Amino acid sequence: MTTDRELALYAAKLSEQAERYSDMVAEMKKIAAGAIEQELSVEERNLLSVAYKNLVGARRASWRILQSVEQSEMAKGNEKRVKLIQNYRTVVEKELDEICGEILCLLDRHLVPSASTVEASVFYLKMKADYHRYLAEFKTEDDRKTAADNTLEAYKGAQDKAMGELPSTNPIRLGLALNFSVFYYEVLNQPVEACQLAKKAFDEAISDLDTLGEDSYKDSALIMQLLRDNLTLWTSEMQDNKPE
Image 1 (cartoon, rainbow, N blue to C red):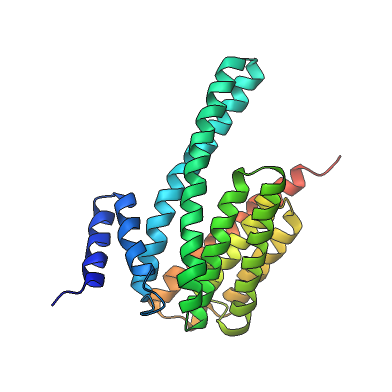
Image 2 (cartoon, rainbow, N blue to C red):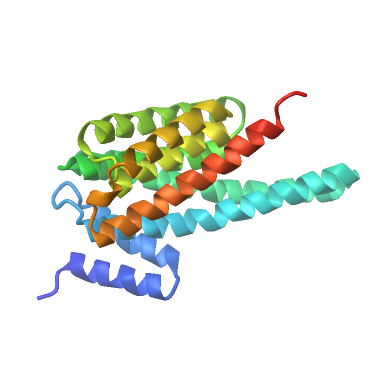
């Protein structure tokens, strides 16, 4: 007999195929809410991440476009258009606030406490940090500082666990280093720290890459490529910004 949980999982996969991520989130929330009684499997954990990532990703992209257009109209002195864009941006920010708040609540109440392995714990703490970072991207003044402080705390908590117990080539550990370094670069505006973190993660993993199986190798190598791409870009930008 099919359980409610199995039906919710099937419905979530169906929603993903149909690219209806609001529906996918609704189904995965049902599973996440029961995490204390029955911990999420790796598959369920990944589906939850995909669901919220797509939901928030669309709005982050919208926000960036609106911000870019706003700056363009501001440069032209089009005050009425600027006001219209700012009002529209506020709508997107409200949606981002709600989505991030929802997943952060699930993480604090159900998911982080349910983690029985180091890998699951790092996965959820990284996720928690990521969604605080998404808030920090558009918040201002004290709200931005609060979001950035929460992000830093969660990333550091995840990093402490990962460095101690996960291999350097573990995709979750590498993904954590990737996102943590992006936070240093884009939110805290600390490029030196960003590069140091990314380089350390890359160098440690490269020496152990030969020990991986084919599936793990693909996942880890992909994230390592992203780390290297960021390092190349950031180093170049730092050189360009050096005073003559």
